[in-house]
Amino acid sequence: MKNITIIGSGFAGLTAVRQLRKKDKSCRITVISPSPELHYLPSLIWVPSGLRKREDIIIPLYNFFKRMDVHFHAARVIGLREDGRIVETDNGEVENDGLIIASGGRFIKKLPGIENAITPCEGIDAVEEIKNRLDKMDSGTIAFGFAGNPKEPSAMRGGPMFEFLLGTDTLLRQRGIRDKFKLEFFTPAPKPGNRLGPKAVDKLLNEMKKRGIRTHLGHKLKSFEANKVITEGGEFNTDLIIFMPGMTGNKWFDNSNLPRSKGGMVKANKHCKVESLDAVYVAGDSGSFPGPDWMPKQAHMADLQAEAAATNLLDELNDQAADATFKVELICIVDSNNKGMMISRTENKNIMLPGTILFHWAKRFFEWLYLRKYK
Image (cartoon, rainbow, N blue to C red; front, side):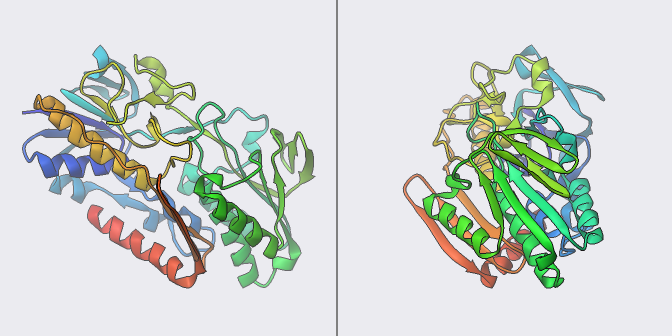
């Protein structure tokens, strides 16, 4: 019996489980994660407005693991040994014949004063803090921004910040107090959202202008203070900072012989195989993959990579050609709480459809459709 270990219970990890079980009913699958839960990060954008709550975001996986015959190992990974055959955790060691790393990424928290900012994609606690802060404010300035990893162009999450920004604008208008607030958007990128495509950049900037949102673009960030954002192009005061840093690899990578990219991710080829290691694959935010510089770090991309990784791992263990690849595809709906703009990008096409309430409801329907697989 093949003994396969998956590190992580996020999008990539759970898609890998489904793909493995689809192709092999008898292999032993062990998932290592701190808790048997899926945190549905795309819906964090709706927590500040009350459209979603903690119980809507965190999905228990007991039933899913039982259906998939998965052995769950509750632990945090602290390292790898023997070229990936032994996973070291704070709850003992886990041996395997094959390994899929799907442990996500880590936000770079080196900017001086970054403790004064809230990073929403860190999870439900962060967005609940945003909600609590917004509920107590009746006026003021709110700053929204993001940055990247200069050594890993794909290691950023700009899309959600547009959604938090536009969603907050909508929320304040619904409360009838938008005129008492200043919304400021900042990023070192001169063309924010460029990975979504040139049309998307123009559309997003025009939307900000229409909503009276000030922009600070193309200036390197220097630091944050409790009530101030400081860049090389100037500074501005603010009462709340919501900021998404760039991403790098997990800290436990340092306690392994995993090959790393310049940006700190696990280096993989187009088949999601980790370079120089047998039967070790990576999917999602943990990996650095060949492809265009706009290749996204998002749930859809993680799913596509996980399917390829699981397929190839089984083929390798069965002494077959492990040649499955993944499609590079960006699909997202930039939602503003009451409407959404649809964007799709592949290596051959870039489609953008204007904001409408239909896309807002389409995003909510997709959430229901996706999560029902794990309930």
